[in-house]
Image (cartoon, rainbow, N blue to C red):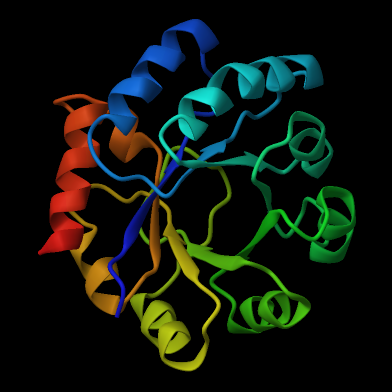
Length: 207
């Protein structure tokens, strides 16, 4: 089984100039598979500006750059893909906008049914969560660890575990076989800084 990889999510609100430095620090901490730009209640132009500032930082380090919710923006800025939630847009609509060569990931929350539908439609990954309490996203549902072990046993489509994940609680998800661990606050509010957080997550993956 391949090692779990790190999938970083930006805070829901950022100062782009300041955050660019934090992102560089984080990516200097060790391997990261992807970074998702997740800005909520932010004007279109600001998301575009943030993507144009942050995507080159990721690409310089061979890290995929994903846009949350907005396939139109992902397509416009040339991002590597888009992540869509159940209330955002259908997989089919997102795929039509970003094209066949882009990543399209789909939130399945805690639903086996939704995850199977997404995989059958062609999603590049499905995301389960929240596994732990989180302040990053309102109105979350609680997902069970058994979802991960069930998924990896039956399906080849990669799965992402999300929701309140930190260095201290990630071990169970890694042991269950999650392909990716998606982390936001667990990176940006780590008491030793984002670089140390990424380093510690990668040490967990290697154990």
